[in-house]
Image (cartoon, rainbow, N blue to C red):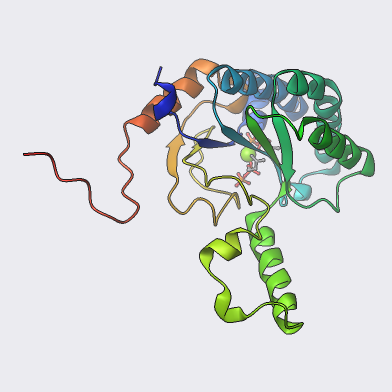
Length: 242
Ligand code: IPE
Ligand code: IPE
Ligand code: MG
């Protein structure tokens, strides 16, 4: 395993493939989502054990509301289970839990559980665990632009002062470093409206494994692959020493 200093600071994961995992086993899609929650627990524990600084998990997109109501309500039931059963462990293991996404559409009891989890873990100093829940990057960017436009119209903000940094400070990820590594499971190779702004210089690891089968060993392999990448951020590689 990589040395702690070569670990990415921020890993984000697009947890995909629950439905296909279930289909392969002739099970209902719901069974795939249940198995997906176990994978979340395993990966969060692995991230804590390896002292990762930030882990962001794409749990539900703003487009996932388009799924059949029975699937959406099953997923919401799993969020209830997770936030009611797992926050104690997060508190005990010094994890700071947060949510990014739209907070106006989900059921009020889920939002209350989320806010309770955020409050109870707000003083923790270990892993920064962020769930992208009812999250869509285009909505996030549009909301930031709208807020700035409103301030400009009311005279509180000079449009000339807007910079990439001041814009990023209006996004829901403010305070978090941009993801160094984005992992997507299930063989799909797209962002699906995840962290569009923040992914400007992220490295990508795509794995064929379906999310419920994604193991801590495969997680470590993805981090290992990251350590082999050369990140140039538009500049040139350092000249080899003669
Ligand atoms: C990811 O698995 C879970 C969510 C999007 C909530 P999917 O449900 O997208 O699984 P596939 O892609 O249909 O296999
Ligand atoms: C992206 O997966 C959203 C999450 C993993 C929560 P989807 O399964 O919704 O993405 P598409 O529809 O295949 O792009
Ligand atoms: Mg999918």
